[in-house]
Amino acid sequence: MRSPQVHRFVPLAAYALGALILAGILSFLPASPASAHAVVTTTTPAASEVVTDVPEAVHIQFNEKVTPIAAATGVVAPTGERADLADGDLSTDNGTALSIALREDLPDGTYLVSYRVVSDDGHPIAGTFTFSINDTSDIPDSDALSLDGDPTTQAFVYLNRYIGYLGLALALGTGVLLVGCNLRQRALAGKLIATGLAAVAATAMAGIYFQTAYTNGVSLGGVTGEALEAFLLSWVGVGHMLRLLVVLMALPLLRTFIVSETDQPVPMKLGLGAFALALSATWPMTGHAIASGHPVTAISADTLHLAAATAWLGGLIVLLVIVLRYAGPGDHNVVTSWSTWAGYLIATLFAAGVANSFVEIDSITSLFNTSYGQMILAKAAGLSLIVFVAFFSRRVVRKQSGQARTLLRRLIAIEVALALAVLMVVVVLVQTVPARVANYEADQAAVTELSTIVNTDEFTATITLDPGRVGNNSIRILINEADSGDLMPLEEWEASFGQSGDQMRTIRLVELRGGILGGEITLPEEGEWTFAFDITTVDGAQAEGEAVVTPYS
Image 1 (cartoon, rainbow, N blue to C red):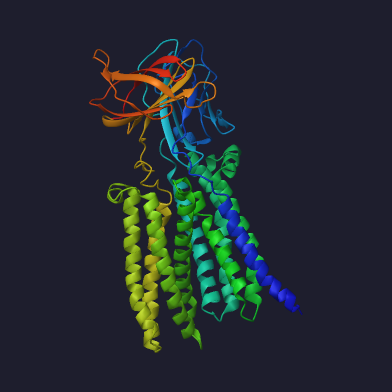
Image 2: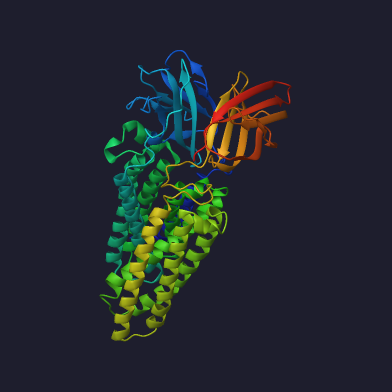
């Protein structure tokens, strides 16, 4: 028999351990917002350079860690075929230098280098530049590069995430009924929670493989050991491992709570709640929220939103399948208590969801002209419909007749069906780039920016056009020191652009901050456009550069 000191120690330790886990999850978050974009500092060969020998590889240096997306990164020969090795080196040196191994027997002419990477903060970055071997030629198309991922891989990613959410719902929903509503079937509740946590753990493990294939744009059979290693070392991979850790650490506490025949003290329940929040946090900390301008706020809101939504769904499923189907003495009190808890969960769900939407959606119009915004509207409509049905369910709960119980089962069945449909929308939503990332859509092959690098002896200039298409564009010119990659504050600058045979047009630029110039231009038609600039740094060093850019149509 345990002593009173042990009985007091167990809930206190549970509470402290749960709080420690939650604090540990939050400690992994960055202390400050992530930078908006990774920037190319140097390339070898240099942009627009004409080399006499076939290089062994193309090297692209970034100012921060990146993860390459293999299917959309490569080199296209003048003939339109791939010039890089199919099984060649596509790696990063310390995460910042991308290397693309080339074939040996390459013809003379101009080569197109296209890269697409995910920066350390989760942003997708894409760009192109050209170099030539011995002589220049027409710039080849990028058709040889696969910009679309494998559909089967994507389907498995969606299915795996859906099962993971259902597992979380079963664990949290049963937990709320057990802890907050005094569910009588404790042994059965324990099995349901164990089943839910098993699904969470299994999908966390399977998700490592599926997400690796999805990120690299390959089939499930195309995943390599190097790709898996890179994923496990990435932020998303760490999130998957943390999810497994939280599940394992919560199991002893859950067993103690479930096998006990007496009501557990408040600290024990708070400890379970802390574990539930920590487990829920492992999803948003590997998604859109981590790359927002306010990661702690976004992840906190997303965690509450996910925890409330899944607990609500899971509770409804348990009520429908077990409580109302095998109703016994005292079960009406469980249903009545759940009705109160459901109100709290719905309020938390909507409040946290609205807060998170403000972070991810930058304007009202983005709700209608982006895929992300449209799915947010569909999700909100579905949730509103569920709440409408729940309103009638709440009224029926007050009645205790057999007819009322039958009606309640039907209403809850409708709620569950609608919630499962909304969950499908959520699974797709979390794989879609948020509206705040310049309307970048995951199902489009075209990029939203066009970047070109110009190298001089002293500086590297990155010229970026957004959206990189015919028409109005924002232009940014980043001037980095060639060796260190540091931004170089400028004293004077001039820039112009035009097409061959036409008079060059002056670009009005302002220094946004040291080493970064910005302005607006209009590209009236397709074709090659030459951009020229002349800069003087605050130290008096001068440099000139020129680049040829072909905008997307």
